[in-house]
Image 1 (cartoon, chains in turn blue, purple, green, orange):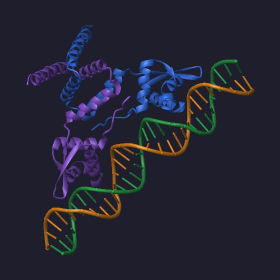
Image 2 (cartoon, each protein chain N blue to C red):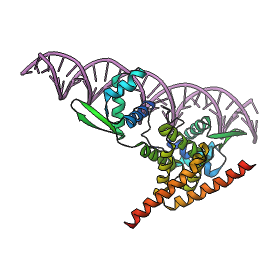
Image 3 (cartoon, each protein chain N blue to C red):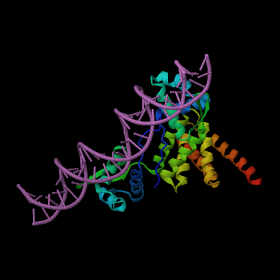
Image 4 (cartoon, chains in turn green, brown, orange, purple):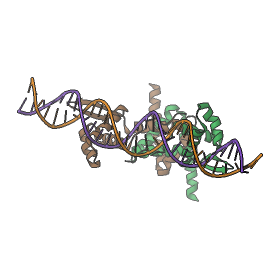
Length: 135
Length: 135
DNA sequence: ATCTAATACCGATTGACAGTCGGTTTTATG
DNA sequence: CATAAAACCGACTGTCAATCGGTATTAGAT
């Protein structure tokens, strides 16, 4: 049985990634100014975190003069999708139906309107998919 | 930003939990015979694993004579639900819509029929929910 | 009552990995 | 070519899963 694989994101890693999702392309110094100072941690710690995220392929980077500029290389939705995928594969490889039911419950728990939205998204997906098939 | 909380399940923990899901109430020895021997690990290792799962509230147990009998205290669907919930809260606390969209993609990726099933589940959920409201 | 074997319980070790930072090397630019 | 900024490297801490040895407990046999 497979297990939920690391990369598993730590608290700081998640915060850094979040910050890059919201603020686009940034160097270590910018991230440090925004997050590091407020947390009272060193510039180096932020840099290590950026590097770890880079190694995990969650960030890409390009060198501009001295410094690297980091960019989130996965969208929020992609990361979420792959993590959910991992959960499902770990717990219920051959029980997709249970997974779907669990999800409907989650979606509805917070707000029943989510179910409407979910239906809508299903139909949107079908439209796109139909197009793709006929091309 | 919150982080995907442990209990995080290791490979052996998951295998043990899986075995209990499939085989119901068992003592350490039974689990050892089924999983431990095949893996060449000791009886103690299985026992530690059972205890760790118990501490994480994923198993309950009752003492029968000398031995504890362990029972999975969460269903597969529940655990999956709470893990998916964690993922969503970690990555997308305030972006439920993105989460819903990501999920539709995941569901459809494996099999388009999942979308039909998803719709069906939504309607089932609504029926139950309508009952609850009118009572 | 006491011996024994099964079992629980405790603690130690190993191996990952996140978080943290100090120290050293590299490099763009004045 | 000196300097400051940044990367890079390595170390240490803390947490947790996996693993097992050793000890305490206890149910059941004699």
